[in-house]
Length: 187
Image (tube, rainbow, N blue to C red):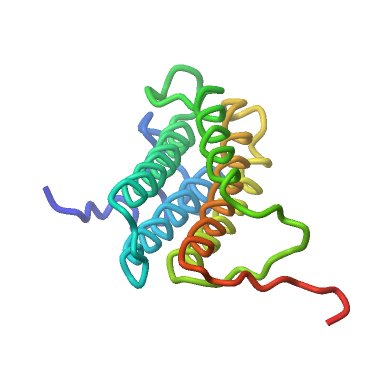
């Protein structure tokens, strides 16, 4: 089977249900933004061995968490591509949100308290995670405009995912002893 189908050449794409919508439809925009975030996480993962001396257990912990985030984004994408009740077999639930909160709590325990805004930067993995975080925030903004059309758990899930990516970026920077740069309003 070929990757190209030519069915989208006129600016439309198909959802899981078979319904065709414009490629600039809000639902498609949300889907594409989740896909973009997933790719940015892939970039972060590709950098984890550059200058970081992970123990096998630390490396595995990080990769497992990143894979969970990527799978959560696929669950959200499946929901978004399945308008109407019962269309998706990958429902985003409160359990997804609680699992993300557990990851946040574990990683935050190992970080210094945040008292100032930090500039997104650092190790390439951390910088890529900051980028992924901002993309997830954009997906969240798009989905806000779809309230009532999506599962209630999608917005909290996106909100927590961006929080987790922020904490993960801070964790990576701390792990590689990168000093976080803070924002001072008087600078």
